[in-house]
Length: 601
Image (cartoon, rainbow, N blue to C red; front, top):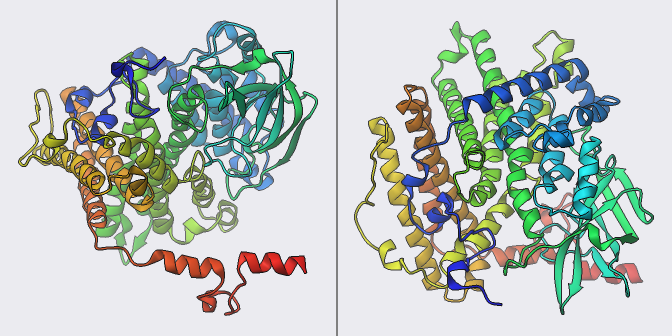
């Protein structure tokens, strides 16, 4: 049955029953009314979070030496069992199941607190609470599957989620297959998964697989015990950072799975790489897997920068007195505030039942948090100079403060890759979300083409004159963003032609992300000032000033002259026909076809 027009959505992330600030922004509409009343964590909920994070911090101080974890590439013996036994792998599950019934934001705080001590521990908490058995309990109806998940949660056992495949997670299809066994409701599962968090230690794993049913291929999620016949758990992946985090590959050969352990969902009418429920969990899960450790590293970095700038004297002056150092410190503080602000916006409204669709923001903040934290950590590395690039162990040997900037920088680089490489996330957002609002042309197209300032109701807004100017600028640039998208769509009537211009899509997504960051920091600064705390006003000003410069640069790149012939250069390089002088030995390389022929001789 076809959906009624009122229920039709432009993309799989949209919700016809709930509005989204970023979804409106993608359409060139600045909805200050949606974010002006910025959410503040309930005091009682905050106290619960304080107690839980203090308990976790005490445990990790006692049980975990992060430098040892990094050096040995292993968590302390029995730590995962203890975390599971304490209910930390089911932070949001009901207390009757051994969980803690925590809010979304307190779960985020727990992961961030763990990351401030040891990133691999934080990722173990995140993978279980974002995509583990406890997380799926929130979307699984009563029945055999729910009973299976509930048992795992009650026992504090470990679970995993397997989606990425050797062929590449970016593929729309899943090469792992589930074939129904004739005369039964059971399936045979075949395929291989890689980069599976907790794969080497999990008892239960959710596996995305292609099922052919009703004449079409669909992605379904199957829940499989790792001790089932035909399941092979391979070696751990060894990463540049996050050493000690249990992560590996799984292989499935004719693994029999009961039909009752398949998650069946309504077809949303949009082609997605994963099941709808998994997509929702992944969106929010990135807040725990990516944004929480990113915020932890940002907070640590600004603290390290302050300590170093206070004790280091150059030519008789404290390092903190130099203009460029002050600017770098100020930028880092403002960006840390922005990461925290965006995380709060992505989680607190759900805790407070505000009936907002936050999935667009959660997808965008994956990049916002990881990229901002990377910039902050890079500044810390540069400021600390010899004490930054050097390992903590080396510093300790010569009596320098063993600040682990080097270790955290390696850990942090993972966050820009995990859950989708940063530039590809922007590409997907541009192609699947932003373009969807301009094909077909939106009903408010003429509104986007109007001149003059965007009308803005600032009733109840408490901002300094500079920040109020930033607010009006953001509103005007949001309409300009919509106008740019409209004009691009009109120049490219064939949507696929524009979708193929990936750099354009990446620039559009980056612009929208910057506008989101500006808007949310201003909203939070206003709300804090309304309660008597003006401390965030200068941070919002610093962040917005830099964001405006970045947006102007992105706009210039969108409006730049025709691009050089990138295709000719890359084709020559990939074929081995050109630029041999750039190879290590200065000689051309044979093309792939030539190498294939040579190997056959």
